[in-house]
Image 1 (spheres, one colour):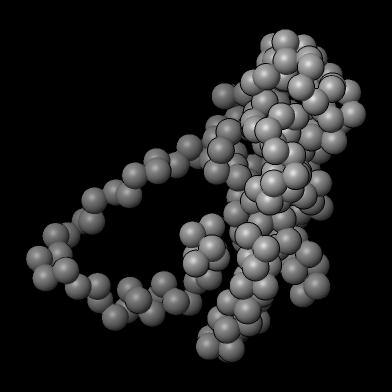
Image 2: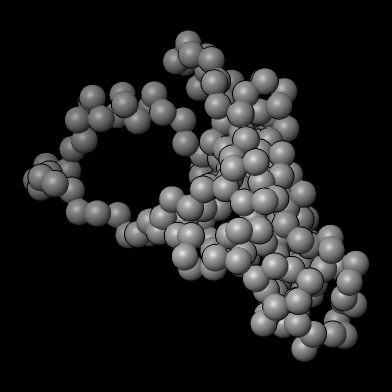
Length: 190
């Protein structure tokens, strides 16, 4: 995880070099908080995508307030009434790394940094729909410049429209895929 920012930066430079095109916008998984810094350096918009639900996103955005308000390991049954839309959620129901677990782990630190960085994004989009958690969505719309529900996306890939009996992918499809730069956690962690 420590090498992810450098790997991300190098991969972006290679893509720019190979395509001859400048970066005009940086779309990343929201988990990669450092992409916001890179976008700022390049003078382009950062558009992070959060693949989980709005409640977990809200918990990470409010991590500092939660840690200031509740004791680590002692108030598990307290309700999160200070956070819009989470008044029926107990602190024990928070994602690990917000108030319990190893708060100094690399993963917890990255999520904490993400929660702090997201308000600087040009827009945050999420794999959800607005009606799922309307009060949390309303609060996130207030906290972010733009907050867009664009899902939910099915996590299972659709079947190909035409059977590929030889297991080949057309060269044009590969060229198109190379022209678009998409970053996933998996690619950067290799």
